[in-house]
Image (cartoon, rainbow, N blue to C red; front, top):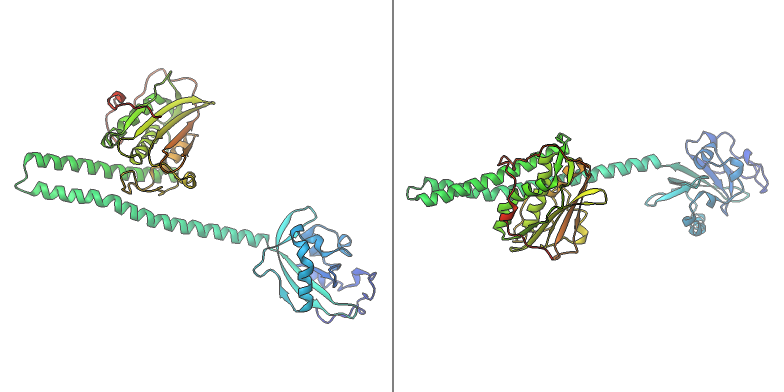
Length: 413
């Protein structure tokens, strides 16, 4: 620490004293930038590290105000802070609890830590400011904070996932338990047993779909999904997705309209995955639309893109949730019937599959109770294949094209 320095001993009895005679050699050996100022904040000496840190030559700094090394927003209040230090001149750190920044000759700001030490002298009190560039430290701190947030989010998602999986499996397992008891009951008649078998099939299909979605999401997140691209007509994608979603749509008594195609609309993609995207959007619309609601699905060419739209008049999405609905395990709220259905992975899977196809997906809603619209944009393919293609139903069903006429169409207004 620099203390008990007499200005007469170092040639500073007048302002014109030679600055290079102040602490020769000692300051340049310091690892940090050191700036020595007088009582009014005029720079009287700096070391080489100061020149390197701020980009000024030594003679550009000496005789100038210290405030030239700080951003404009700090300058107005600096005089008062300098007076506070002058009233109680003792070694201290300025950076504790503060965000301090230096200003280089190039006009760029950088975070700094500053320590002050008073230097008594006969010609007036001097103050040595030791300045350290903490840019690397701040980056490390920011990175540690980012990783901490990621770990906290991962832990939160894990807990949310376990709770959601437990909820989703509890109902099917309860049904399976009841089915087993019914099938073992001697008094159960043929009709009761058939109902039990139907329930068994529905619940096992539900669990198989749940497991398949989880596996798909895991494969996509780990980059293990390879798209089997071919020329795909979106009319067939939509009709097959409608067929996959038929049971849920009809059980909720929704009216579903598939807008007619003026001509084939081709894209380059994996037909299985594209059907999965549209089916997930339809399932989401059916779940979050009150019974007897309306769903409209269309595919058109717009501004150099093939655009799929799924619109409903359901519960809607709060504006603050529009950017989060595609996040993993995110559920805006309970379904239209009040039940908290699903794991919150369907829309996350939609976004990742669409992005694998080089497209985008967005959610649009005017708020709760105003319905919602999901818009998928895919790169178009100018020409189609010479032979038609077919898509097997999820997970391993018929490959016949969907008969959309069996679902009563109702135009959304």
